[in-house]
Length: 243
Image (cartoon, rainbow, N blue to C red; front, side, top):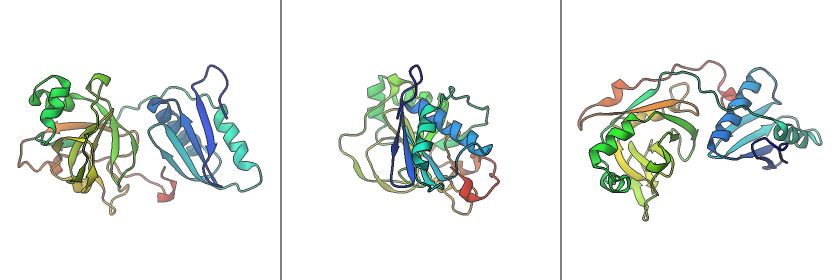
């Protein structure tokens, strides 16, 4: 199912008996479509769904409440007909994440960028990032903002263990590993206190959510940067209403 001519290309596909997957043209369109879904749900103009999950170029609508025959197909046609305006980013204070820029791949990234290691840290910390979507592990956000000429490939040989707090680059994304895991991204630094990325006792549990602005702050080795984090305010409303 596609939108009319002149609109950004979109496909709406079935994803199980009570879910739809919306495929968008690119990451910017996916962010805008996700924001439009949240706006319509907030004002009661969206059919009830259990969960809205954004990704790189898709948005999943899971748990469609209306189980009547044909309801999902009608919903799909409605979604495909939307003309979503460009994303308007609200002015918000960024979450500031302290980073010690001493990662094992820092020199490799510097070579790819054609600069010294100190300049990698300077450029990375000057960049205004935003969480495009979350996934991979609880608390992991895929951050966009680096210009295309600073995008780097994944490592040829992934590591079997990347430590929690590792600040990493791959393609257009920056991410911070919330817990130890395998990974193939380029590691340029580390966050001193990665435990704040995911805290089940906090509401919301994730420090980084889609749309969150982020700025990395260079700190010296041995500095406990956890206290300098600018945490987002708690969100009201039942947990089941979160996207």
